[in-house]
Amino acid sequence: MGVLDATSTWPVPTVAGAIVHRGEVLERIGPGDHMFRLASIGKVLTAWTCLIAIEEGTIALDDPVGPDDGSGRTLRHLLAHAGGYGFNAGDPIGAPERRRQYGNAGIEAAADHLARAADMSFDEYLRVGLLDPLAMTSTQLRGSPAFQMWSTVDDLVRFSQEVTAPTLITSETAALAARPHFPTLGGIVPGVGRYETCPWGLGFEIRGDKSPHWTGSRNSTATYGHFGGAGTMMWIDPDQDGLSLIALTDRPFDDWAEDALQLWPALSDATIESVSS
Image (tube, rainbow, N blue to C red; front, side):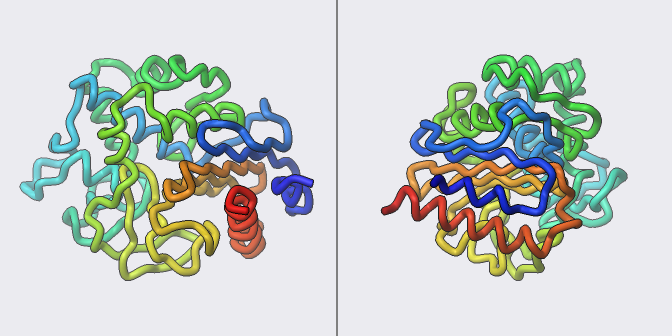
């Protein structure tokens, strides 16, 4: 019996998952080609696309982005949810570096900045820069790059392999995505909790010492990943040789949040135990 067999009891119509360790797929479950809305996991793919553009010299982390209000707001702030943007579209509602203001608007502004600098749509840059090179042929952007991306577990396996052993960017640039930026900021992980310190990388949430959390009690503080309001989750634990867990469902998180916040950590702990024993 595999670790992922536990997902058969989840209260969701469809689930697909994978465990990847040292670049090798240890387990899969569910339909590998089923299209799921990633919801906020799309923010991670958007951030990685920005990192590709940074390596290509199209943009830079210290580029000023947003209104010219003298606040010093940069692309780095936006990718780390520290730019003072509210949850949804619009101008910033506060100064940068005051708190971890999680939302869609900052990520959308980052994607718009890339599109203007590259003189091409973000959708096209995403495809040419990230999806095509990794053969992520089933991943589609159908609107906002913050929450309207669709993909499959097979494609996310390819993405997790890229994140742990990058081929499109240098390992130094990849490391920037997985370390905390503006680490002292407090904030909220929607649906999970409010934290005095709420570390975030570039696109990726960093587990830190958050409690409660949607990852497991055995996950290291260096674990990074994201979950989505569509009932999706993905994490990578660098202290477990890049162990990755992906679990995609098609039931909105809010409809089973209480269950998800028990089932996801339990699956995470079982995943780590399976490679540690």
